[in-house]
Length: 367
View 1 (cartoon, rainbow, N blue to C red):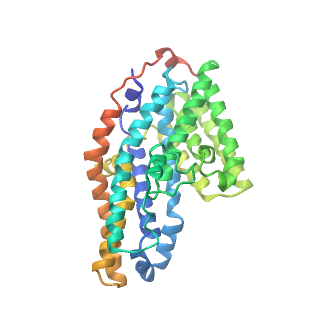
View 2: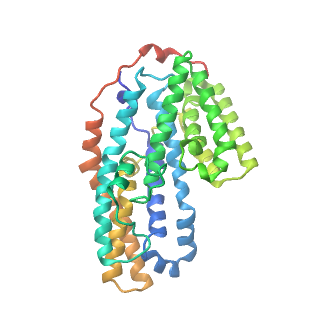
View 3: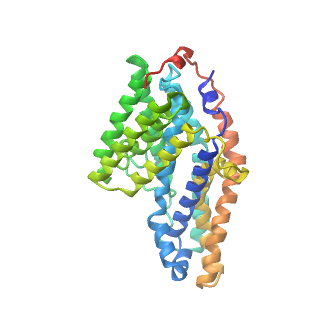
């Protein structure tokens, strides 16, 4: 049984719905934050635009918790790392994540230059240099202080860091004896360090440890609320909840409160065995599937639509607001096309290698 096989064990309707909603809020956040069209929309809907530009970015917490939940499911469904070759798994993760990301960066460069021809606005990135692109390709742009080529690409680097950090903790737990209780303890210590320390200082927001509270909460929730744990799992989930509430008492952070709510929702769904069944609908499933592509493409597509409406459309609130809605639709259409033409084919290429799995670990438990 391969790690890829574990990762593909059926789709989860609730996870698809959360990813679908999260991606749409990120698109709307970028539309509200970047480009001149929403300056006109703000005349009509000032409170909505302010909320989208300021608070809708908290949807990132949905992806953090879901990311941890899915990583635990694929790497160590019973809390013990399945493969004895973590570096090969990290390489595979990079290929699957970075291949469509690099294509999206190239498209972003082209779209930015097209938009620059019709529009002058401070949301347009400066022309990228080779070193800047290479830093993005290696997912080191935030750590090196390099200006972003596209909005939101910091998250791709953070997601890879978090995956590597969780993989490292699981490898250490495996080396020390390989039991779920040990994996959960090591990760829980990291979550506590994050929530009660690093996450309180925004200077750490280029490092995985800043976000480990949310990501780790997703992984811990996956392990604790599997139906086979019964009431014992609910007890662990209560402990995690109390730890997060304690961190919020130290300093209230809406983003952490949202992460807790997402984790509790996933935990209740898994414990109640409706994670795969609710909400039903092909729309949720499809938009969940294309969410990464929509995330990658939304900024450059929005820039192009902004440029076209700036150059050719009247500078009137209603007209420019129609432009915002068209940009929202264009981001989703472009994301869907990118998913089928780029992400899916490259994903199959990145999944060809099958990693050896120690099947004996699947019987170990102990949470």
